Length: 552
Ligand code: ADP
Image (cartoon, rainbow, N blue to C red; front, side, top):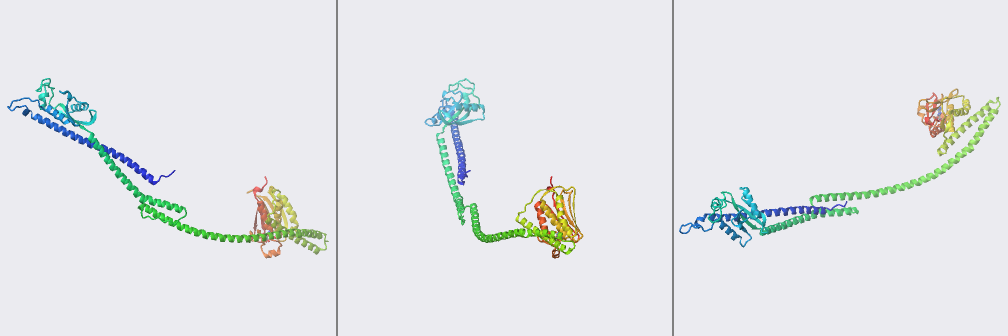
């Protein structure tokens, strides 16, 4: 929604206040002028009435003098108060817009018949003796006039001509009305023209309105000028300054010399805000510059690192190539002849006559050491394959009984050579499990060959397979009563190339890769491997197959 400007709000509010107060002023002024005029005319009418009453009283008091001849004889001249009063009134009215006349309901003269206003006044006087005057702006001969009527009470002087008995002829020759003392005998009716007064009212109102307009416009102009100079102008400057700031010119400072105190405070705040913004912006620019520098340097360092990485990558690629060449060389150039040597040694040992014990022993030694060498090579190749990520892991149902039989087949001759008893036991409730047959067999062979190797002559190695009824897992335990492993080495023996000590390394052949391979093969199948052992008290290695690997 479009916002209305302060000037417009100001103008509309002032105009509304002006219009309302102007209207109220005109109404009030008109009314008060009219009230004043009415009061003045009432006073004028009352004065006329008092004057006419004075004439009436004078004539009444002068009757004896008027009606007595110079000889002292009574002679009625007909110049009674009523006639004189009416005559004076008629004379006064003649040639002017004023009218003074006497009236009552049954006048002796038809000219004195009351008109509508006078009839209302007479009725009001007759109805309530306390009402002695009656006035209003009313019609008189087709023109609006100020009308005034005053009651004429019957006194003693009236009774002579108008009193009782009714019907009697009075001194003037007219029939008496039979009035009583203090009743209403009629009314004096005064008509005052309104034109001049109305004109005066109009003139006064016009004068007042002009004055009011002048004062209001003057006040409005002063308010407008003051507000424009002390408020609007500074605000406008501030608006322009904001626009400049929006365009990026932050070095703005406004002068508050001709601003009102409130606006001046606003300008002060604006100036300090602009200064802060300017300083922040400068600081920001510095920061951006320094950050850009840092970024540039980081970029250069990154490029250098990228170059170094590329070089390393190239080197690694070369090394990988070399490793792969070496492995394939080991695979073909060592394994093949070693297998032939083992086979040849076996044949030769078996062909050796019983009387040549030392020769047979030599063939046995060749066969044993070649077998150890082959195991080492196989471990190395498997570890290398695992590092290269080229190990394929099968996940199919396998019968652990079959694996155990196979391990027994391979390990029994070795155990015999080491003069160690090798036993296996598979519980009847062991289920089929999902896994890789060859890798599981290889794990058990590694554990078995270690157990045989590290068990002195006459010792026992046992491979047990059972189902843990508690948690539903299957456990494969390789237990021996050999030299045992110190607790601090329990974790380290699974590291590559770790062997417990140099003495044992010398005494027992090995590469230090067997257990590392066991742990890796266990991990890829989702199995766990753990060891329980103490020095001199044998060792038990356990492979735990989780319940979710059980088939069905
Ligand atoms: P190695 O080729 O030396 O046997 P392994 O990784 O198979 O390598 O074993 C690591 C080391 O763990 C062995 O050198 C040995 O010190 C210790 N070890 C493994 N199995 C046994 C065991 N059954 N009894 C005692 N020590 C063992």
